[in-house]
Length: 292
Image (cartoon, rainbow, N blue to C red):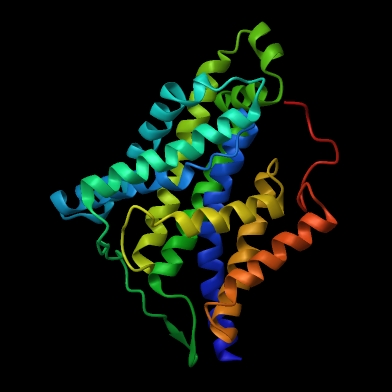
């Protein structure tokens, strides 16, 4: 029982990271109707910037801020330099361009930094705290959970309580009407990409200290799990990304702790196939999918 409680608590922290990354995929899907397969590679760029900033300053917090800024700048560069030229009439073109971007970014990172893993220490202890004889979350897991929930709450406020959020939602749902009303849809699309890339960079940075180290492929598995979360929750649903992330994170951690790490991807795949068979649009998808 103690072990199960520990796995559930750890799974929530990992699930929060999945949810955060899945939310970044949902943001781009809602804004541009593109599944951004380059999101993982873009997030790793932010992590390398954080690694360099931390090494130069000796402060994890400077690295954290640098990762968020680098993620936003990467999103700006990708949207303005690549994705803006994807024809809207051919959705597959954006997907192909994103896949090509993955190859370019990972190759460039491999050339610049090499394939070896670079350790990134966590800012807090990763050993679990024992409460009443039961090991629960580690201080770093608690930090990850609080940051993820804080970012999600901030995004909720942004999209529901601010003029910028209203323009972002209007641009995504009805771009032509928004243009007629004076909203600069192109600028809103760029801001959406910057926001999503910054969130993805932060999610990857939170995960890397618990993995084997930073490599050009550090976010590959994170992207796969987060994509599963986005599909399970519904690509149009931020709430689905949040709940789906927590569910997938808990299931994956419990399966890893009880049956082994090799079974965990199968458990995630079973969830994905089950949802696609029962509700192809995702558990929390709207009944009517809006037109592109």
